[in-house]
Every structure is written in structure tokens, then in C-alpha cells.
Length: 339
Image (cartoon, rainbow, N blue to C red; front, side, top):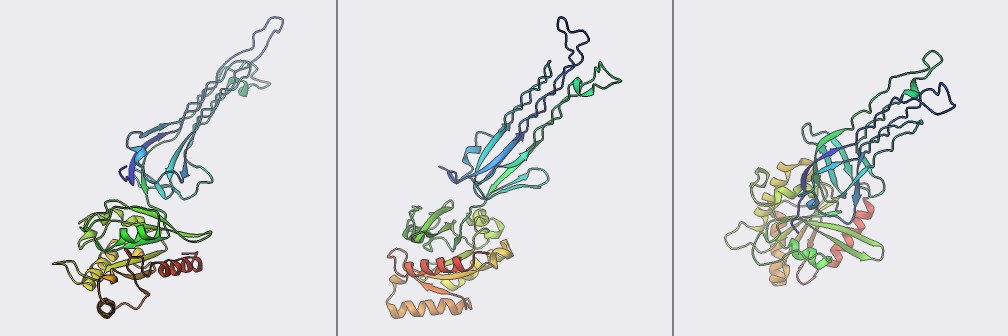
């Protein structure tokens, strides 16, 4: 299924039902008086977060959501039925804004309560409401008001604890495969990841975190070059970034340190707050070098980017160093729940 993280929809709440003018006319009951009932309220439109959805693909074909109109009032002071609500299920992390003004309507981050996005119209009043001692036969009533309607934009930002950052073919997909049940495509050529992937990493009983893998970044990404820039927004909700670097440069490519610097520049150009997130350096594919050369290569990378933060050396494909990294990630997330 194609990963879709943006969609436009139209929502309309139901109009309120009209009140009516009616008089009681029954045998042996003279001067029965007004008995026109009120209309029913229009149905509203809500959104509800769902853990069963992870893309907005359902909105490729269904783009209109219209709640039911309230029924008109009836004689004998009968109130019209209320219109049925419409509840739209969306993935957690969906942001909903108006299409024209960009005004925020909802940020869906919970499955507990539905969020109102379009309120149904108010019911009209029947002529019974206007009865008084000086107006015993009122002939006025009101129509129901119109329900709200909006053209909305849905934008999905995945909710993950940890985000993976790096150049194409750095080993991000291999890492997420080694620590979770996620199975993104892995191959010996760049740009194998074409859409974000989520994986749940179980560290121990009742202790786990969610990791997000996005397509690799390249130089010029902030200007729209490559694929990764389209999905960087999915890292904005994460609490920790893992910058994964291949310790062996690809043939004809820049050195690992130069490639890392390019990633950091693109990240900063895209969003300063994303650049400022806690970030760890993960040096991958260390198994491809002898131990002494591996250590020298790692030292050269950290010096080349003037790095003084946490550094981890792993081989994602062999699982070397991965368990210790996941344990440290879990401890960090538990100690920084407010991030």
C-alpha cells in the first residue's frame, strides 16, 4: 500500500431542522392552541485517532464527509429527530488545518475522545415557543441554522520516540529491521527506502519505544532535492535523533565526515528546532574493517564533524552493539519523558 501523508477533504455538518407552525385541532377540544414542535439539531463532524491506521490512504477516494440534517418539527409539540454525527478515523499524529487560511483545527494525538471539527446547525423553533398571554395564536417559527462546513487539509506526522537520520544506504533500514519487526526494503544501492517506516523496539517486558526510518537525505534536500525532505516532518515529534553514518565511504562519494556535515546543514536549513533536538552519532558497518582500522575511521569521523556528543559503534546487519544502544535509548527516554 502506498504511503500517503497528506490529503484534502471536505466536511459539512448537518443543518438544523426547521420549526413549524401548527395548531391543535381535535374534536371536543375548542381553542386547542399552538402545538408546532422544534426541529432537531444537525449532526456534527468529529475526528478520532486510531491505532489501526498508519497512512491517509483511505482519503484517496473518500473526500466528502457530510453529517445528517436535523428533522423538521411536527405537530403535537413533537420535536424533530437530531441528525446523526459523522466520526472520521485518522492515524495518530494527524494535523488538521483549514485549506485556505491554514488555521489549526485539531492535532490528533489520542484515541480517547473524538474532536469536534464541524458543529451541526441549531434547531429552529416551532410556534409553541412564541405562545404568550397576549399572543395565543402565534404564527411565527424559525428555520434551523446551517451547519459548519470546511475544506480541510490533513497532514500526518508520525508519532515516534526515535528518528533515524542519514544519507541513503547508511544502513538505517537494516538497523530498524535488526531491532524491530518492521521489514523495510534493504538492498545494496541507495534510495531503497521510499516512504517512512515505523518499528516498535521491545527492550524488556513493558519497556519499548517506537523508531521511525525516513528516506535518506542528500545535499540540497532543503530545496527539494531527493526524497527525504518530504518526510523530515515525521521526525519533528520524536524525542531523540540517531544520526547513522556509514564508516566506509561509497565509491566516488564524499568522506563520511563530509557527508555527515551535509546532513546537518540540510537539517538546520529545514527546521532549527529539529536541528536542536537531542542527537546521537551511530557509526555503522564497523564489521567491514579490522578492529584497529575501524577505531581509526570512527575517530576520524568524530574529529571531522567536531562531535562531542554520544557515539556508538555498531554493525546493524550483524547486530553488534545494537542491544547496548537500544538499552541506552530506553534509559534516555525514561529519564526525559518531558521532551
